[in-house]
Length: 131
Image 1 (cartoon, one colour):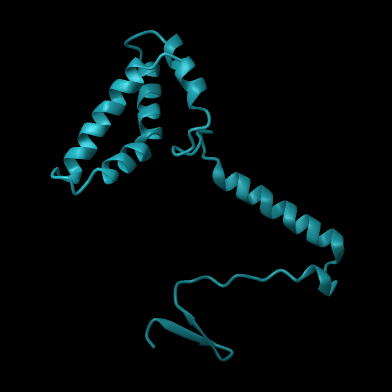
Image 2 (image 1 turned 60 degrees about the horizontal axis):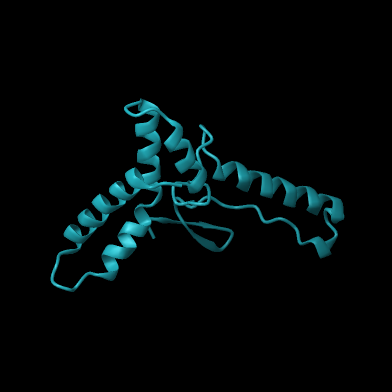
């Protein structure tokens, strides 16, 4: 048992931090007010964990893609902002590329080739998209 520690008769893997359990609301230890505060603190922590330092959204969340396409159309050609936004839109839709490539694998073409062709198609689609 090199990687495990024993505390009070309970075997726990080393490296996994202990978590403090919250009392059940029916136990009455904290009362209903304490439970509501704990739930609010947990939901705030979850929301804070979803946001990054710079306020960017999850790259797999495509809910705001349409607005980004409108913004892309307004930026001048050749600007650094347009290139960055274009790259962001491409990265945002890469899971779709991977899904399509996996869907057509085992049909005579290597998965890497399918992914590459699908990625090129995605880039062209982002460049030609007219919102």
